[in-house]
Image 1 (cartoon, rainbow, N blue to C red):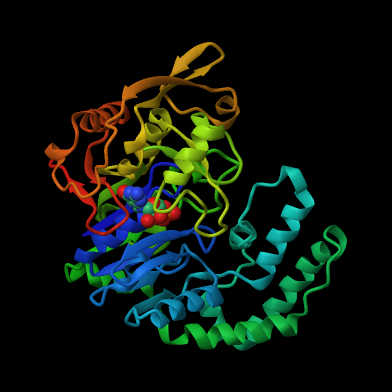
Image 2: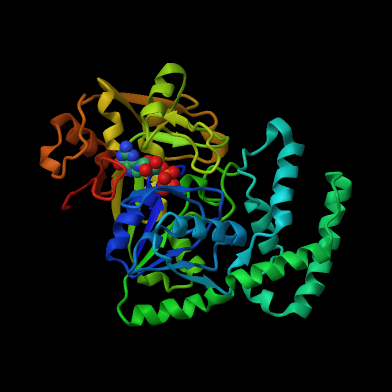
Length: 426
Ligand code: GDP
């Protein structure tokens, strides 16, 4: 059976923690999209880790961690991270890399940096990890699959051809030093040495694992609202963040994904540019940012302060619907314990009309939040393990959100650790 863990919002919902927790019962954890542009923070018995490319299952002996074909694989970053966790005492994880995964090339990162520089104030707020140029090349059919590393002759020919096109941009648009095919070849040969022991036909491996009754976890990056089709285009990421894409990005039958666990945060945070209807500012935002997550809401990749907002029922209802949610994991609820009252965004007012349906980007830019203020519980809920033991106002908050979004909240996370979880039978 396959379960997917995905995000309902703008990312940073706490998917890493939920995946790490669910990985206890899984055999295989697969990353199916995205790259080193976002990060998960995981706290466990080995310490606190920020993972960008490694699947969240790497901390267990019993799991195999897989890089699916849908991932933007930055090979040096991947192995740097791998070595870092091993150096910190984590047993060497079992890793498999899809022979169909494509490689983030050194020039993708340069192109990302140069383009952000060129756009100046109109930039997308990219993390400059090369993700947009990577996926552009993938779909322009000039990307490099891991499998291509193993045919040196045709690789060299393709590198030369691609450098010719890229150098037009480097020279005339960005006015930067030109790419040298021989440098890129040398780098790719290094990559080949690094990945060789781990490369396999991942789709076949997963097919066989399913037949053997193995439990597979698909691990999403970012959230619904960053999906290139269904999110806040163009302020989105470049690969689909939806569970449905898990079937493609891992290479598994869509009907095998039986559970879609959508991670939804008890308040809002976002990084990068784009409309953010329930956003708050000033001291109110600073306080939530300081208290948020585990040690503050700052980007796991960039360290940038995240934009903060109240819980957005409109965006979260839509985010859960687009994922095909079977279960909601409601996270960081403990963070709200300092508030006397908690505003929640229950509708968007657009051109004088209130809607609870998430609109397209043009309309979203005009949306103003309709807020409802709920009473806070004003106490620390960390350490509580039974739903009934939560303060009444806290339960009311959960139940209010559940009703607004229309999907069952079956897990409540009240701390960053693996065991900070309250299960609810629905
Ligand atoms: P991801 O990208 O969705 O995995 O999310 P991040 O790891 O970027 O952000 C989640 C942050 O919140 C991390 O620092 C987690 O350790 C922390 N976290 C996750 N769940 C909880 C929770 O229930 N309570 C608190 N206080 N922190 C949490």
